[in-house]
Image (cartoon, rainbow, N blue to C red; front, top):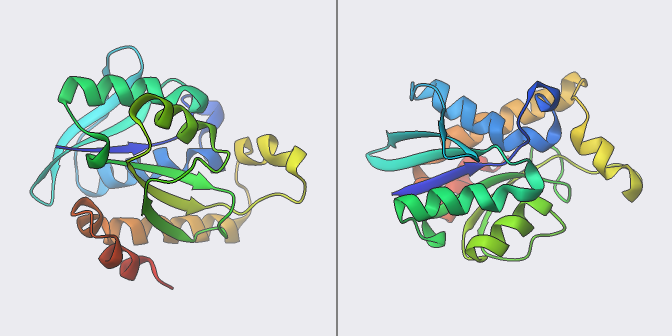
Amino acid sequence: MILLVGLGNPGDKYTQTRHNIGFDILDFIAFRHRCGAFVSFGKNSQIIKTKLFNKDVILLKPQTFMNLSGASVLEVAKFYKIEASKTIVIHDDLDLETGRIKAKIGGGDGGHNGLKSISGCIGSGYYRLRIGISKPLYKEQVSDYVLAKIKDEAELQKLDNAMLKCFGGMEALLDFNLQKFASFCAS
């Protein structure tokens, strides 16, 4: 069983924001693979239990808000007995140019509070799918920047292209073949 986690914040207020790219990618995967709708699981989660590329996969959208995502991941991982090494977290990354994609295993949280929460709950040995959102000019603008609705058409197009690349490389990602996945995402 593989746990595929998309990070974001619940509620309409946060749709189409940079911080919700993880939710957006999971929604896209669920739609394209006709996986059905997300259902509530416990108090902190929405999941879809499905098969993707002949693998048992749980798509998870934490409903705890970003900074507490680890509680949701831990709840689902414990219930389904999924190890950190079989967990892939999709998240926004300020340090990558908008639309750029990188995958890796382990590492620090890079100041991302969602990752910090997850690492605190399950350790840091999970896979990370980093989706670039660029960064604002000043550090003080980060919170407003990641939570703002995206209105720029060029930026939206870059993020849509990133979703398509992630979708195209999903089989390789679920095989934990980061080199092959990277070849789908290269541009």
